[in-house]
Length: 60
Image (cartoon, rainbow, N blue to C red; front, side, top):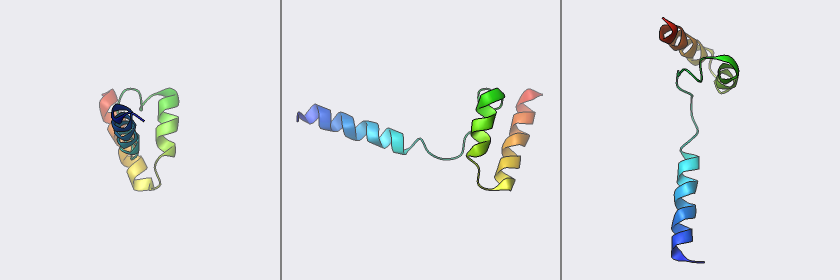
């Protein structure tokens, strides 16, 4: 394989690994289907409530 392809694959892999974690309160994540998906990512009820509170603050 060409060296450029190896570097590209490693870069894309690093980006995908970094995509995990808790979602941010944004206009997409605080409405409709985005909210449903975002709430499924939380394991801790306190974190889930903090996310919902942040969504409420964005709406005001």
